[in-house]
Length: 219
Image 1 (tube, helix red, strand yellow):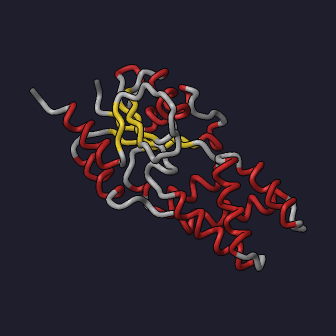
Image 2 (cartoon, one colour):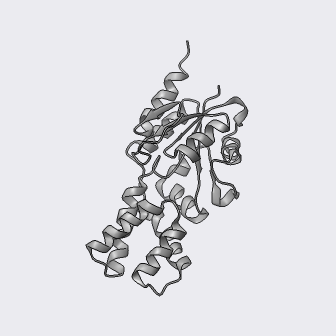
Image 3 (tube, one colour):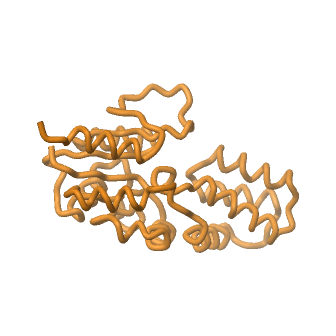
């Protein structure tokens, strides 16, 4: 099996939850919302994630906002790349993985402006060989075509296997396995009670990289 390591973006490499909370604080200040409103926004996010169009439809109606849904959503996408941060050690870990001969890529669902902005602003675009964003390519995980695009951007193909690391059991793990990759699930506690067939379960990307490297040790 080749040394191909693909990674999800949100909640795998970057702390989207922390960024969302900071966006909520800014949104609440802008619209003069109180603590109960903030709690409502957080609860709504947990209930409709990752469907942002649904989220902003609910937000607009709940607060009787004059802005169209698309304007609210577009404002969110413009701001999020400036709020997201990688989990500790992620940039160094990915850079180190490439330095030891691995092909490293990112496979993410999401709107082009939002996801590409995150990749650029966090510096992740500079420490991987390639990436595939559903909003650019017109195909979403778990479709194997998005994994294949990412693999090709890394100078490889799915024919010789590899690894996928992500937090979503369907889009990341089941999708990757159907595409012929081994799946490492980053369990963020968002799938309580769900059965899974992940090849490995970890708490963060550092653990995932250690597993991949140990598996490919000579002898």
